[in-house]
Length: 179
Image 1: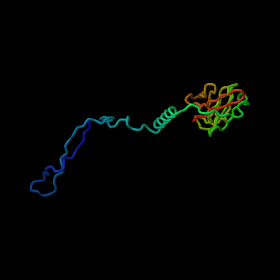
Image 2 (image 1 turned 30 degrees about the vertical axis):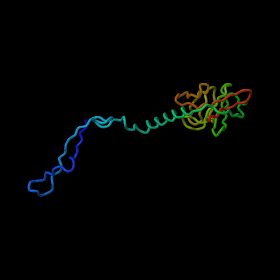
Image 3 (image 1 turned 90 degrees about the vertical axis):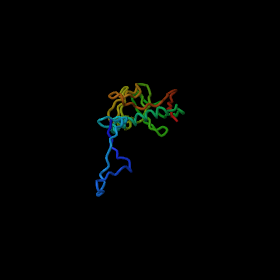
Image 4 (image 1 turned 135 degrees about the vertical axis):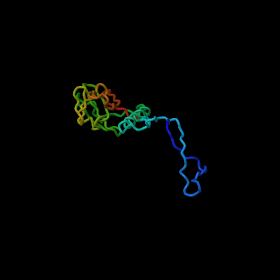
């Protein structure tokens, strides 16, 4: 319970000193007890309503952005041909620009995969890295990504390459552009 001091209502008796001289005495205060507000305790406000710091705020914004982007995602609208992918040798990585976005296409032991050309950890182009077996190593931060498992980080699984839909048939490759 909090204690709040209130001034008496205006227009009350002045209660000046006897004889009528001098200033009136200060108004008397009355004590009113109220139940505590939600989120406060007798020791002060709790951390429930306060910001927990920059890191927590960043996490909250990222989580909200992921939720919004997953709700607004639309199916692929058109397939665009990707030149030079049919000639890609095993263990080779090529970067190309399709629809205003840089895409890294790699051939891991005969399986062709496409990812957005950005490392989720250091934000440098992933296409400049080396592909050894199923692992695509970032040239900037040396994080290995397992291409056969969808681009999951081997050292830190929370980092994942953004995969793009790619189909290879009859010697030509096409990538899906979303609306």
